[in-house]
Image (cartoon, rainbow, N blue to C red):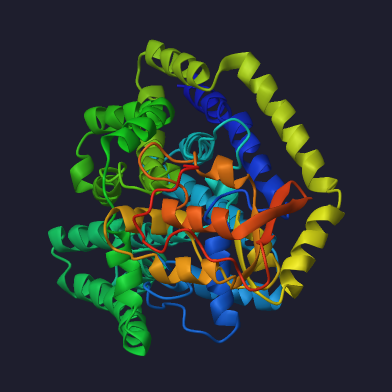
Length: 506
């Protein structure tokens, strides 16, 4: 029917404005000098270890007190960018943005090929970008952060795309290589390996199954074994340190956002599974298996440290099936189904008011991208941190890593480790009390820091914060940061030395 292709093209264009707003917001973050996420400086600082020739994975019970929580691929790439491009968060954020766009293209290619309609692929790719990266107010979407996730998602989708494109030994080796690299980026990116292996096994493709599994295992296991052999701390960082508590209150906060942003793609994915005939015997079986496998990590959404990144890969797989489901509805004989679909999609994306807001947001973000005013105060602060003869503590930690200094203490994860009985803060407290830290730079006062928490764990371990309160004095402010220095050159000592001390000012 002639109206169906035109309806499909109209449908495909509906998420375009929201997708452009997400991309523009991510692009605007590329030129920002400061950290826009708590963990960005942590990842950056760990990549700096490689630049300095230090081991990436180091024991967690001695300085530097920071966790390299991920497998090494993104750290390797980030360190390479620091060497080739130069310092700053921009190159790593640009990498995430490029990987996110590549992931959206692969979502579109897979969906369009399986549906037999190019517009279905365009719809799937734009829907993924529009809805997979929610933001709180004006926060930078995950698409533009100096984090590992988008590289892993792109590699996982590339593995699935290769398997759907060709079904032979060579394709299986390439796909296995890509799936292994995804695992080498972050252990949670197991879905492509699991789904690809099951798909080949169920299809009685014994030789291709073996080639796929062996290539993935080699590219993942060999570097991990070598890294564990060097310092003995690889497993401690990537496994033990990630075994954090799961809380319903964390899950409840994230589940509400997940449902709000993903109900439409999930509805369309369900429509595909219900309407498509014999999808289990087609190429789509691989996508369905990938969708199911990627959903497993969403079950851990209540984990301490969980955020919107926990469902990015699942959202990509859901968007593929959503594109195919949209094709089923548009190509159905009844026009009412297509009309209802357009109405639902337009409603979810907000209609004309949201379209206008998206256009304004894109214009604002592009202006920020093109016109970036220098911040001499922030530059002066970074320079001071760089030349400080003593050790430096900071949160946000951006001034430390941009000043070419190591992150010596990551407060939140060690607050969790203290609460769960996995860390003794006595050594760090002793260093603070003896004036080893010549500079403490915070985005808030120590009094405010004492009240900062996520409802479960304090941002700073209370005994560490109390030691800072006893041993430092506020010198002043610079670039919106509070500058604390030791009370005396020799350090006055603290009122306590016990890790379980509860100071009055808390």
